[in-house]
Image 1: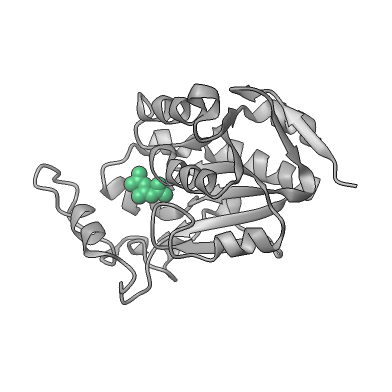
Image 2 (image 1 turned 120 degrees about the vertical axis):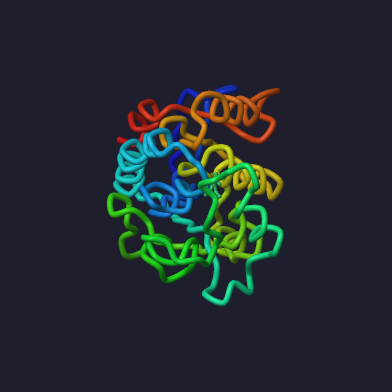
Length: 231
Ligand code: TIU
């Protein structure tokens, strides 16, 4: 028998069947979270983005203990950059008004070639390293469903509900929830376990848009009520 858990969320309680729910940990990579990584080079606020590391670790450990499937994603490109569209290469590079923006995807930074698979900076931060049995899904886009096998992977395991965490709220977290919602997954983002590069307004706006209008794209819940029901 599959147990159903429920916890307070917006716009109303999120109920999920444990055996059909996966935790998604989006792009908790050194390139996005650490000094000298891609995010900082792009002008991101590191203090803001690092705020979700500790809460995400608590969430990950609770989901592991409860037996949920765990999927980690990593944004990045093959070393020949053949999976990186020129639009992305050009726009995430030397913007005329941004003096920090001197390196592009594939260029060598202090954490290795930026957003390039196999490099130190492309991998997940030490605190959140996957354990055996957990899946790491590499993706070339912001969303987790474009040009990956995640849909087939989740469908093959009868996953219907997703608990979503990771960085950045405004970018890959939001894009993944929107993509998943269109594919019929019930999604709940966890407020403390996501963060972005502009804490002042992007995070609140992004989370508000997800649960607005009776859950336009899904649900937003808080960490502690979820930890309570998983315990
Ligand atoms: N630029 C930015 O905010 N984020 C990304 O490029 N990737 C993710 O959000 N993972």
